[in-house]
Amino acid sequence: MAALPDPALHPREFLEGLLLRVEATDKENYFKWPVDERVAPGYYAVIKHPICFSNIRQKLAAGAYTSWRSFLADFELIVQNARTFNTSKTRCFKCAVVLQRNLNKILKPAELDARKAFSVLFPY
Image (cartoon, rainbow, N blue to C red):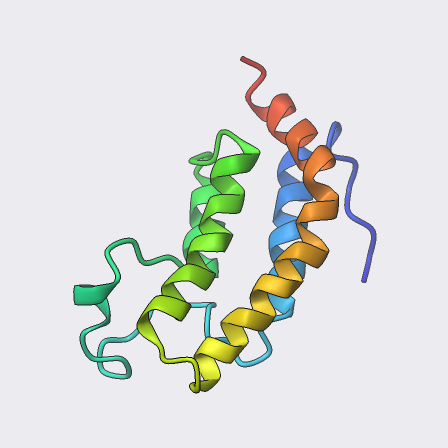
C-alpha cells in the first residue's frame, strides 16, 4: 500500500488515505454503504445513529469532522452498531470484531499524524 501523504502538507488527503486503508479491510463490504432495511429488518428501530464508510467519506469531504476524536468515533460507531444489532454468531458481527482489530492496527498508530492533519485543517 502506498505511503500516506504528509499530514501537515496534505491533511485532507492524509485522512482520506486512512479511511481507504480501513475500508480496504472490509472484504465483504458490510460497512461500506448504509444498511438496507430489506436485508436487516428493524435495523433503524434498534440503531439510532447509523454510520458507514460512505457516510464517513461524505462527512470528511464536507468538513464535518473537526477533530481526531470525532473522526475516530464514527469508525468505532460502525463496530458498535454491528455488534449491537447482530448476534455474536453472525458473519457481520464477526466482521465487526475483525474491523475493530484493524482499526487498532491502522488508526491508533496514525493518531499523532491525524491530530496534526486536523490542527492544519482547523487551527483554532
